[in-house]
Image 1 (cartoon, one colour):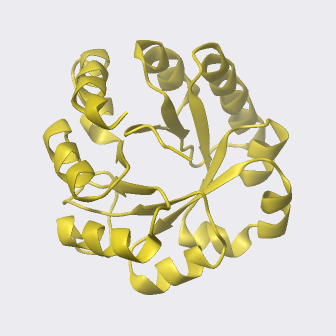
Image 2: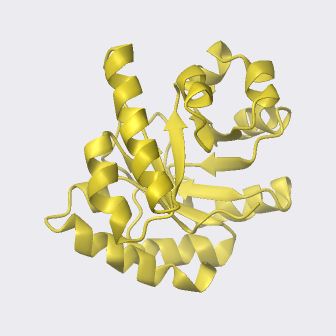
Length: 201
């Protein structure tokens, strides 16, 4: 399985509808603190636009809804993993991505045979408070050796310039939040990301 090298993470269907038409092929919807009906509506809207533009939609956390709505991927953090029905996820056609920060989490994740592994934060990040120090490029190299050909996503403090670094040393995809969402011209920033990552597409 091949992941697009540019992996955008957003918190609403509004962002999906706004940015996917600019050429994004892999996008995660990460919604927090909303009621179930609102989340379902966001996922339905995001799925519609992704279908139209042939983009893959990843749903963070809400695995039951993601299965019901026939989304492409579920992404789970280690805390989410404890409450998820892995058997149900595996019986569905949905692909699974898992977050990792240390070797213990990597071992747990590999035992589940996900479709991709994410490692972070690679660089300092303002997106959320992390108890882990920046992992750096060396950790990407280590993870690459440990997971073989399994797709590897790097996340945390990424810019287009830093994305080149992580893709060069072994990551398959660069996941980004604030570099696009907080940019004054997010549409232009998306186009920059797509151009910079083209060599790995």
